[in-house]
Image (cartoon, rainbow, N blue to C red; front, side, top):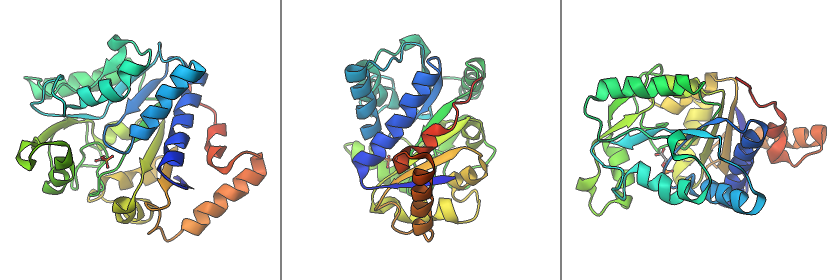
Length: 274
Ligand code: PGA
C-alpha cells in the first residue's frame, strides 16, 4: 500500500479526485466503484467542478456503488441511491443506464446479489474503486468478522455502525439493521483501489488496517495483500501511524525522482486496460 499524508480534508479530496480524473481521461469507458458517507463528499464536489470547469467527460463511465440499506426505496433521503444522485450523479454527464447501486428493495436478495456480481463481470470488472473506512474497520458494509473472501450479500450491521450512521437519521431506531453490500472479495478484484480517511475518529482504525495484522476483525486490512492500493489520509487520520515519517519520506523521494508534487507520484503508474 502506498500511504499519502495530506494536509487536510480538502487536499485529501483533491488527490482522490485527481486520481479519478486521470483514470477517466486515460480510459473514458472506465468502470468506477463508488462509496457513500461523509468522507467522499469533497471528492465528489471536486469531480463536479472538474466536469463543469474542465469538461471532464463521464458519458462513457460505468459506476458500481458498494452498498445500500435494506428496505430503503431509492427516493428515501437516507438511501445511498438518493445520496449519490444528490451529491454526484445529477451534476455530471453520466448515463443513468450505466449507474449501478444495490437495490435495497430487492425481493429475492440472494439472486439479486448474484445478479449484481454478474453485472460487474459483464462490465469488465472495476478499474478503480474508491473506498472510505468505518471506525470499526469495515470497507463497504463488511463488518468485523466478515469473510475476507466474501461476495455481494446481505449483511447485518454492527451496533457501532448503526451508532455512527444515526447522525443522518432522525432517530437511531430508524437506521436499518441490514444492508446489501459488495464483499471483501468483490472489492479486492478491483484493479486499483483508493481508500480515503480523515479526522481523529479514524486515526486508530487507520493504524490498525495499515500497520496491524491482516484479519477479518478489520476487513480493510485485506488491502495489504492487494498490489495497487493508495491510502490518502489527512494529518488527523494519520496521527497514530507508527511509520508516518517513513511514508512522508517515501513521498519526498518520489518527488525528487519524478519531479512532481509528492501526492501525484501515484498518478504516473499506467492505467490498467481491460
Ligand atoms: P464516513 O463512513 O465516510 O461517513 O465516515 C465511512 C464508512 O462507514 O465506510
